[in-house]
Length: 540
Image 1 (tube, rainbow, N blue to C red):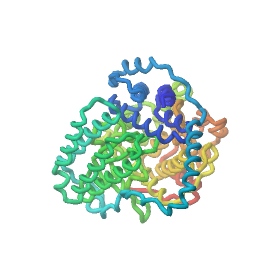
Image 2: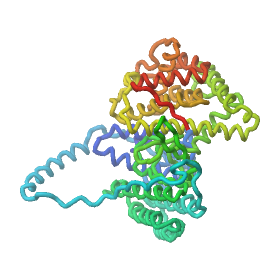
Image 3: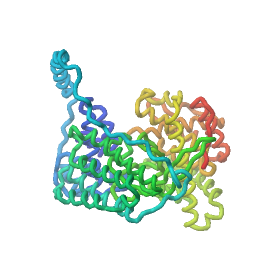
Image 4: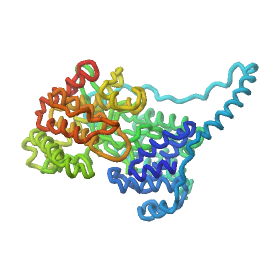
């Protein structure tokens, strides 16, 4: 774990640690990954870091995580003290022999011989313990059926925005040895049980809340190394989902996101609370997909570092408004007033890539000016309208994921050619879904397809850090759109296992002067070519 964290610190990316742990002795990977995520969660909470786009801040969290693993007592809010404490340790190279597997194999062999003898006398063992499963959510009513802004309850908002997150923070600290009084946690649980706000909306919500707290009480005394951790985490996640279901059943706009066992590399583990600002629907011919626009209630660091999210445990795709606001402030609105659209942060971006950033900014600015029309005369109206357009575009992307989950999505040959993973491996599966989502998003976006294209392309122009799906998706999209529009290629963008940024720039640059109609039409044709069926464009 410390070797993995050291690599992550050097790259300023926690995904590097996850990738490193994927290479260790297989029998230890699961427990090591759980311990890593627990340390990262505690570090995020203890340091108070929320900006994971700043490499220095990311390194601070990772160094803090390493100190937590070593159980060192340091003021984790102070980057200088954390860095100094971390530098006092020399890191020994990890063993590459699968010692744990060899030992486990020997034990398993001995156990198997014993079990083989015992099976002559035992017909069957005791039944498996009851595992709680999330029941079917109640039928949607009101805004959750028709769309709109859900109801608010100030007391519930206080509980989910302050009291409940405080318990989560306290429990995370105690879980990893912080000197906090256990009695404080018990008092916080008792206070949450005594809150009348949930029960005031009916016995179903009140009961779901009480049962969730009972499971939470069992979970918060466990650590990832405990035998009951996985099963209790699974039950807690289901109980939390039921609370969210029952909140929707009374048209209250709140959602609790349980990510204790999240496996997506850009989802940070924890329990996070959100306000549902809007319930929207995206249509695809006769089908429609419900999408929730969420804004964070709690002040816990972490959570999904994404603009939107669709996953197996989420009933609805979601758009994360706080992340979109950050994107608007740092990437989009500066372009509107003349800034280039930054495509990297190294010497290539400052030299050969500089003209491409200027071209990207001009293309996005042209779209924005057309979409905003007279709203551009007011900074407030321009910001609000741009946010509305970006939210709608991300909503379409996430809705496409939901539609794809219900189908058997073809594995496009252009993607297979540049990925080393087999089609059913996790990285390849995510890349396939992202490819569908981005191409569909460009084809369905009436106003801002250039923004979507360049936001995707910037992943392929970055250097350093781990491989991410979007970098390879960007290559397939740019090469495909260029082919559809008759732009000449100088050769494969990916060769020798690396992305050739000059070749990519030569293809994506001419796309910047294409009209919205040309770009959308090319994207629709590309999606049909890649996935061997016509694209159904999405609309609100």
